[in-house]
Length: 309
Ligand code: NAD
Ligand code: UDP
Image (cartoon, rainbow, N blue to C red):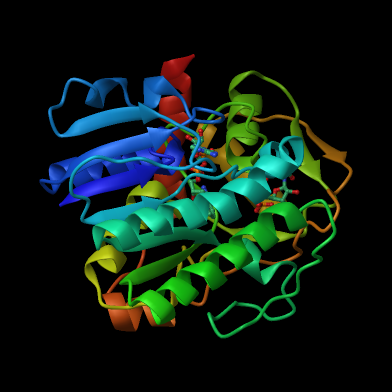
C-alpha cells in the first residue's frame, strides 16, 4: 500500500512508520514537527519507501499519485501540549480530520483515526467499554482535546456512512515507550527523566488516580490488525493492567534501581480519576491483546532514556 501517515514524526507515528515499512508499504510521513522530532525518523529518511513532507494538516493537503490508506495520527497529544496550543488542538482534530478524510475520499483510500480514551473524559464506569458515552467537560481545559477527538470520531463515521469510506477508529489508552519526548509533560517521561536526573518525582494530587499503561510495540500490533480488519466502529486499544500513579512512581523507582523523594503537586483540572480499557472487542474482533507487561516495557523505556542522555 501507499500510505499517508500524519503525525509520522511523533512518538507513536515513528514506530508505526517503521512497522509499515517492514510490512512492505510505502509511507508519506506528513508532520509539521510541532511536537514531533526529525531525529525520530532520521533512520528512515534514506529508505526509498519513506518520504517526509513538512506540512500542517489543518491546512489543505495535496498528495500526488495513488494513496491506498490514510492514517491520521497528527494531534497535540500530551495534556501540557494541548493546554499550550488549545486552538491548534481543536483545528487538527476538526480541520485536520476533515482534510485527511478528503484525501481518503478523493483517492478511494481506507482511513484510520488515532482517537483516545479521553473521549470517555473522567469516566463514571470502570473499565470503559466502547459503548460508554463518556463524562466530558466540554469547556474545561482538557475539553479542547477531548472534544476535538469526539468531533473527529463523528466526522469519520459520517464519511463512512455518507461516502462509504472504509474507516477505522482506534481509541488509544496511555501508551509509552522509546522516543517519548522529554518534557512533553506526560507522566512516563516526567518520572523517568526525574529518576535518571536524581530529582524528586512529581505526583499530581494524592496519586490515587489510576491509568493503564500500554507498551508501544503492543499498540502498533493492535493498530496494524485494526487497519487490516473490516471493523468500522471504534475499538479500544490499551493494556488493562490498571495502576495508581503512586504505584506507578514506585514501579519506576524499582525498575530504575534508584530511590527518589516523592513530592505532591496540584492535580490538574478535570484529571480523570480512573482509566482502564475494556478490551473484549479488540480480543474478539482482532484477536489482539497486549503481551509486554509494565516491568518489561518500563525497563526498555528507561534504558532508552538513559542511552540518549
Ligand atoms: P506526539 O506528540 O509524539 O505525536 C503527534 C505528532 O503529530 C507530532 O509529530 C506532531 O508534530 C504532529 N502534529 C501535531 N499537529 C499537527 C498538524 N497540525 N499537522 C501536522 N502534524 C501535526 O504524540 P503521540 O503520543 O505519538 O500521539 C499520536 C496520536 O495518538 C495522537 O493523535 C494522539 O492523540 C493519539 N493518542 C496517543 C496516546 C498516547 O498515550 N501516546 C493516547 C491516546 C491517543
Ligand atoms: N501525573 C503526575 N505527575 C506528572 C505527570 C502526570 O502525577 O509529573 C499524573 C496526571 O495528573 C495523570 C496521570 O499522571 O493523573 C497521567 O498523566 P499523563 O499526562 O501521562 O496523561 P493523561 O492520562 O492524564 O492523559
